[in-house]
Length: 428
Image (cartoon, rainbow, N blue to C red; front, top):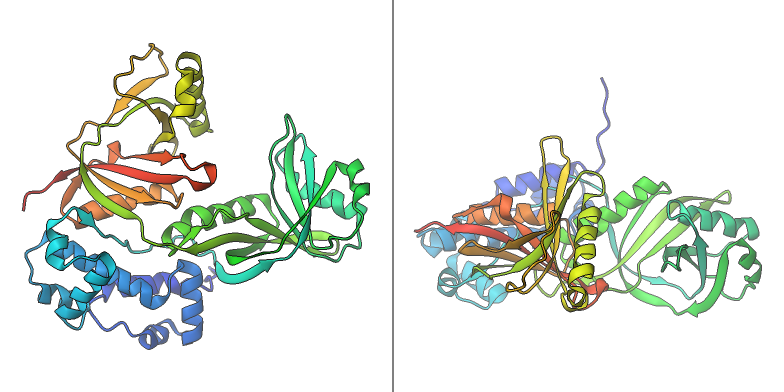
C-alpha cells in the first residue's frame, strides 16, 4: 500500500511539538532541525499556513497558558513563568503589561480574559501574504440566468470574442439585476474596444483605478468545488486563525489562461493586521431576546432564516429595518446532519403572534462567556475556542446552549460577531 505525504504535513507535527514543549527553549533553529527543513522554508511555510510568524505564535500560546494559570490557580508568578517557558517572572510580568495594560494581579481579579488557542490546522491549504497591486482595469458586467458556472461562462464567451487576448483577467461576483445573476470581469488591456461583447451578454463599464494592498492569496485549479472550498478556507478558517482581518476592499479572482482556457485561479483577499485578537469577556445574563425558527438538512440555514423573515414581514415589518442583530445556533446529529436555528433580536416585551414555526428564545443563564470578533470566521471553530477557554479557566460550559449574534449595523461588508457560551463558575 502506498500513500502520498503532503509537502506541508510537517507543520502538523511542528504545532504538536510546540504544544508539548512550551516550557522549554523553542529555538527556531531547533524547530528547523527537527522538521528537516531550512530556516527560511520553516519561516515561509509556517507563516503561509497559520498566518503567524513562528516566534509570534509561540509568544501568544505561552502568554495564553500563563494567563489561564494566573486566573485559575494559586501558583506563584515565578512558577507560572517557569512552567510556561519564560526566563523570569519579570519577563512574564512585562509581557502581560505590554499586551493587556494590566499587572498580573489586576488580570487575576478582573473580568478581562486573554485566550489564544492552539492551532489544529486540519487543512493545509497554503496561503501567501504579500503586498501586491491589482493594476488599472476595464470593468465588464456579464449577466446570465444561471448562477452556477457563471464565471466560466463569462470567461468562455469573452475568449470566444477575443481569442488572442494577452492581458490579465480578474473577476468577482457582481450584483444581481432582477432575474439575472452577474459576474464582473476586470481586464488590464483598458484601451481595447469591447463593444462587440454586448452581443455576448456583457455591459462595458468604466475604468477601475489601481488597487495597492496587502493580500492573502491562494492559487487553485479552476474547479468550482475547489474554488468554493478555497474561498471558504481563506475567509472562514485561515483568516480566523491568523493575525489579519479583511479590509473591505474588493476581492478578486485572477484567471490563469493556458491554450485559451482558464486552468487555474489565483484568489486575492485584501487584508490588514488586526488591532487586537478576538476578545473574550465574562458577563452576567445579558437579557437578550430573539424571534427564531429551526430547520434541518439541506439548506437548513436558508430555510430557517426565510421562515423568520416571512413571519416578521407579515406581523412586525418595522423590526426588519430596526434590528441589526441576527441569531444563529448550529447543532449536528450522529450522521453529521446539521440543524440551524436562525433569528432576529427583538424587545423582550413584544407580544408574539402564535406560529408553529416560530419560537422565542431568551438568555436565562447566570453567566456567559462572550467572544467578540470582527472576523466572520467558522462558527464551529469559535465554539471550540470558547469550550477550550472555559475548560482552561475552570468553568463548566453548556455546549448545547451556545449561540452567535451577528451585528450588521455597519453594513454587510463590516459584520461583527459575538458568540455566547453559558458557563457555571467553579468556586476556587
